[in-house]
Length: 313
Image (cartoon, rainbow, N blue to C red):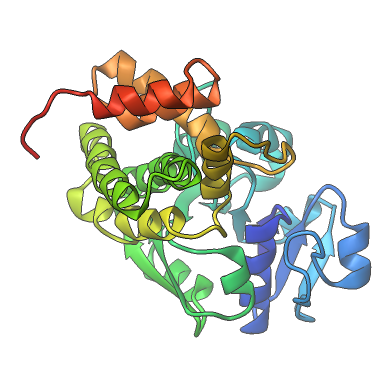
């Protein structure tokens, strides 16, 4: 049995993909009455039905009966969830499916899991994917960091192709930082600055991602792979990305639904603080953090970036 904690878009999509391929899956959420009755996540994935092999539950005993638990919990809620369910999760294989940095501890998901569940075997699932594509069986490739071949085989399907990596730090930071850059790309497009500006932003943003991640011990090839460059390209070029749409709203000066989770907003704040603390040059991240906190206007942020000293690439 595979348990999935969190019935948002990504958790539901993973349940559908794995269930469609014959896995027995328990999809856990705090409130499951509508999902259990309709067998559809009408809010996030309308029109896609859960396979028969997927059970829906609000009972944490589902974790006790599963060897592998996928944690599709928003990053800022992960620590609290683990603390509440630590007994049921003890000794399990725990796969982090969230992207970001915890604002309290300034740690990524693997460190947060390790602090709450020290006996667990920890892996990270990340990379370029939209939940709707996974749920509808569209070909998708992801990075599974910190896992062995058995877990890779268990979580792969004919349309969900997982590549193993030993670089958990790089996979986590690639997935976290690309959300910040997706907000920045949305700002560029929302402000009408054009595709050339977006290309420049993505390129300099990728350099910023590498600079930070390598300083934290990541491998450069990880950032050039699915969990770094691949995810960056996807989320900076599609309005399916919540982070891109959030940035677009900032660029247009319009409101954004506060009920939609935008992991990049919190990640920008955390990354900016870490960069200042550790002396890492992160101009795009710093500007996005300031914009999200409304500490700077959009025209001033654009001017500050464009007036930086000229230098070699």
